[in-house]
View 1 (tube, rainbow, N blue to C red):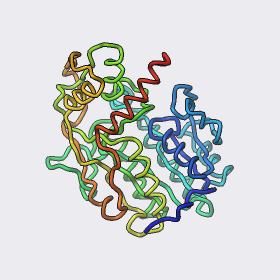
View 2: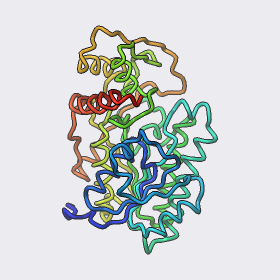
View 3: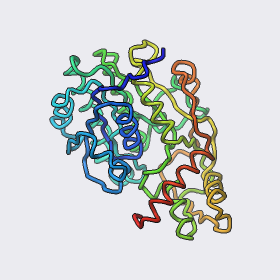
Amino acid sequence: MTPPVNFWKEKRVLVTGATGLVGSWVTKDLVDRGAMLVALVMDADPYSELYRSGYIQRIHVINGRLEDFGTVERAIVAHECDTVIHLGAQAIVSVAQRSPLATFEANVRGTWNTLEACRLHPDLVKRVVVASSDKAYGEHPELPYTEEMPLQGRQPYEVSKSCADLIAQSYFHTYGLPVTVARCGNIYGGGDLNWTRIVPGTIRSLYCGESPLIRSDGRYIRDYIYVKDVCRAYLSLAEQMTSPEVCGQSFNFSPESQVTVLEIVDKIRQLMKCEHIQPTVLNQAKGEIRNQYLSSEKAQQVLQWLPSYSLDRGLVETIGWYTKFLAEGLS
């Protein structure tokens, strides 16, 4: 099913987590497509791509927390939102290890608040996309992950994503809420200001002439998917929500090109012409699954989704974004 070219024109869309890495790019993309955007923002972050790009001036902003049901419902009702893209979450594994309660509150309560607000207003909300993660699968002896595998997170962050994912499915099967779930691997791109993540952290270290830090032994295997491909994935789900093959379903999104942490650090070193700077392997990672990667065959067949960016192309754009950002002294 191909949506009309002007599908998003004058659609009223609530994006939670709009100042985050994915949220910023999704918001910008939707504004450019003619949608009327409402962003639920917990904290104003002037370094966020949403602010730096000036797009914050082109959207409605609701200040508040996902944990507050009244705020979420007000965002939907007051602005008559027909679409909800739920990206808001505590997204850092190490933070979840240190603060599981806050992570569960944001990721689990925040999800059921969002979905319940949508359920109560079916006259308004026609499509909901929930951002899950490959972490929702937990550890499995066989890879790649496919959508039929059980969600069995064990560590706090994994569990929060498993729960949010299952809650979304529950709202579809119990109440018929038009919701679908996206599970992506490690998302990278300009605008991720969590310097403990391997891509932005490595770029910043090399830009400063410092050794990049690798928390693990460097041999953990992951998918790395560029943020613009993730945006297309989320919008494709929303656009095709009326299809029974999409509504109520979960989809993996992956470039299906797995690399180790050491390999992606080496790739960045090469692209930045910093091969002479060697990484420092700390081997201190805790609470992380060693190997994780996804099959995106279902998304390819049902949504006709394919990544547009190779790892090299995505990293070149990403390095360009951070080079400009760091040159402005905003690190």
